[in-house]
Image (cartoon, rainbow, N blue to C red):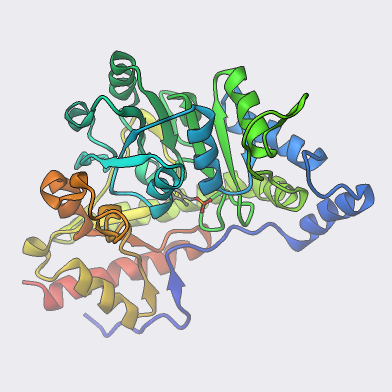
Length: 380
Ligand SMILES: *Cc1c(COP(=O)(O)O)cnc(C)c1O
């Protein structure tokens, strides 16, 4: 095989989807004219409505970021005691639980979906458990039906972290329709972004009202009615959201083409396994992650991660380390790796590859060629 040149410029795992400056100027012009820059202005009302339709969910509230959204969801359900969650997630999921004075309890993941393993939930339920907080990892829907049955049987609430699942559907039902509340993140790294931002969706009008009150300092018609926080999305973020939403379908198509190149090429490399979405679900195209199995590839995931840097490719070991390894959580009894054998195995194998529309097909092919070359030249 010929020598492969490194990429001229660094390639990161993602690149924020940006609308044209012209479109932003137009929307910002309207905001300037109105002099209304936050507090449920026209732009955030319009975005709330458009996202409600896009995500096919009955109620939706915009929040200033995904982490605040999670804490508001936990507050809106009056939770106490313990919340069952997954260690294979971004730190914000577990921080939100702890930040609210609740105790996270880690449960292992399913090796195919990488989401919480419903079979492992039952044994983790105690008299103090009040909720389950699963994550739709990489946009792969959790086993929402089994989780619902477990919640019903045990009187538990369910909050989903759908930060990776914008646009995910399962059997044509929007992913925000399951559990009591679903959180979406609109951080710059997410396919749909408002620079920073998030939302909560739910099916119950009373819960929606409660969320709206908590995000606005606990203020209701009678003034301050409970302990609240400032979780409002401002008009500039909402304008960004309106403009980005116009680009989402096109970006999804571009990412689908990039994904196809990866799927056509990577499974041919010994030791590389791709994660496949179930056929009944609509892809969120948030991440493209692979597993590198050292015994078959011949080198470790960490070795590949470092080698890719030499080609100016900055993949991410996502999620590594597990949240259960963080110093703030590793003392929890449920954080013991023996309790989390699947997550512990996966964290050493997983690698998120560059994945965004502008990556284009040629660069994606070259990344595949580099991985092929690394395996055939250095692997066993
Ligand atoms: C991005 C992300 C969050 C946090 O969202 P922010 O909007 O950045 O606060 C939470 N959970 C997961 C799984 C995420 O990927």
